[in-house]
Image (cartoon, rainbow, N blue to C red):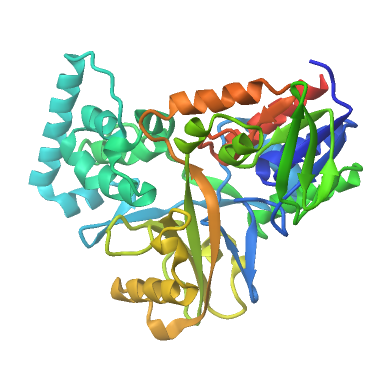
Length: 442
């Protein structure tokens, strides 16, 4: 691989900024193009008056010490460890996440717990006697943990988040996102006290005092300090491929060229710009979210990191209270809440008037007994398109076709959750970005 003299990076999310910062520090001429007015992508902060919010709450946790060291060096003394406490609401009750024995048995009762364990054992035996390969999320979970556990835990929340049946979600999702299945491990632990705690749980995570957006802001500053350029408000409009290479990129009316291009923008958008097969692009999609931000004249609502709401009659799926992550995010008086409403671009929830959506959220919170409507002093929202790649059954073939088209273009690289169409955690995104920077400079 020839070391590039200049690199153009599409998208100023965590992946693009991390890679750009490393390349700029190594002496590469770097230009980053970002369509939004601010950097950070999904890992950015949104200010509403004197309160700051994350887009759903992004934690940094890694089993690789070198990645934690990278973050600690970057953020410095402002990096803190935050304890994790989460609960999920099922059947009108809140269960610990992960569940504890007493908490679970109090909710299920001895008979219910025994039924779960029995179903689990039957599923394990059936799986041992079968060589069938699981195709869907539904099949993967049911064959490993039993139908009862699948129906109680995994189906309601998963279908609410993705907006499709679990039978349409690829088994790859279950295999890749083991943390989704850790709740089942927790139930098994709850009804079998004394066993090892599930390894997929992190009791603490790293978080900057000023919010997760601090990471992107610091990275952008390092890029500029090293002579690189970060252009915001610069949406990619056109890509010209000539003789198997990217000849130029047009963004916000300006033309850019470089020896190599790294794309972190939605793969479907990039694919359309470089003439990837339309049929394949139509088979790939992303799930969107709307984050509803509430400022409240109230004390702490809960001490949870996250609360999960699988019920279909609750418009939001997950909430978090920013001051529980960092007190600096709170308004001068009171507290704040961020509520995640999962949707698809253009659908009913995506198109719903902001005031109407906020009213629905506030009404649901009050009905659940979490707040009083009179406590809400400010409400707003932020639409987040292309937030999560959707792993539908059969997604591999169209994804392969699009990636093959990308591979035909010399010195074009995919990076990040959105760009690579891979649902990675923050540490995995950083790890891949650092690795790509090393590949290009050594």
